[in-house]
Amino acid sequence: MEKKKKKLKTYNFYTVMMQALRPVWRNHPTRREFFKNSRSAPNTWICAECGKKCAGASKGKKSEFRIDHIEPVIPLTGFTNWDDVIRRLITGPHNLQVLCLVCHGVKSKAENAARRKHKKDLL
Image (cartoon, rainbow, N blue to C red):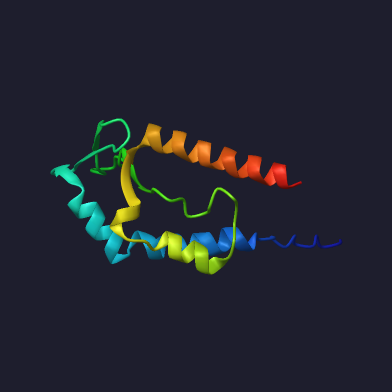
C-alpha cells in the first residue's frame, strides 16, 4: 500500500506579513488612545462619514464600527515596500477615523477597485 504524500501548504508572503503586523497595530498605544478618546458616550462611537451612532463590542456581540486609516495602509497606486506599509499602519491619531461597518465596507471596496484599476492601467 502506497502512502499518499502530504501536500505542502504554500503561503503568500504578503498575507503572512500583514497577519503578523495587524496584531501589533491592534495593541499599539496610539490606536488604544484614539479608541478611548473617540467615544461619544460609554461604549458608543459616531461614524465620521454618515454620523451613525455605533456600539462597541459587548457580551458576545461584535462592534458596529471599525477604526479606519484615512490614508490607506496600501496606497491606491499599490504596494511599494514594507517600510512604507509599516509607517502607514503604525500612524498617529491624525490619520484615523471611526467608520460604521457599512461606510467602512464602501470605502474599502472603492480603494480596492482603485488599486485594481491602477494595476490594470500599468499592464
